[in-house]
Length: 172
Image (tube, rainbow, N blue to C red; front, side):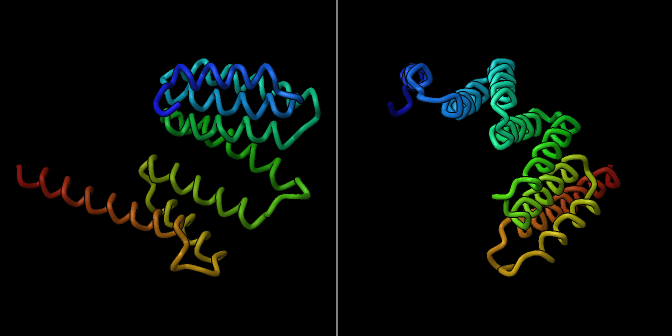
């Protein structure tokens, strides 16, 4: 199926029809929704995610509901709909933190990273640094801590770009 997107979609639809449970259908719908988004069909992706969330709610499966909302958060982030992204992410985090199988430290690390990314996009470097420091304070392996290093690097790049832009405007 290498790069044969039509065949991938057909295979996923066939798999969806044959799925043995509603839970499997939710997961397959996530994959289809993600691919739809990548193909530029964000409205269709959101419809599938809404269906998945409704199915998860009907079957009282908070984790599947959370997964649908989590994916919506990242799609909204990518579409530069930052307020929606933040609301979706916070909803998914609140569910994750109540799950007995959840790893609270990992969930919070993901939250701090996501918030740091949002604040970086909103041009709030001090807030971004705050979230990076929250990641650092919870990490035992700083030299391997991708989220922290990523945010710090992005803050430095933003500062350098800002300096170059300021200098260029000053020299005009």
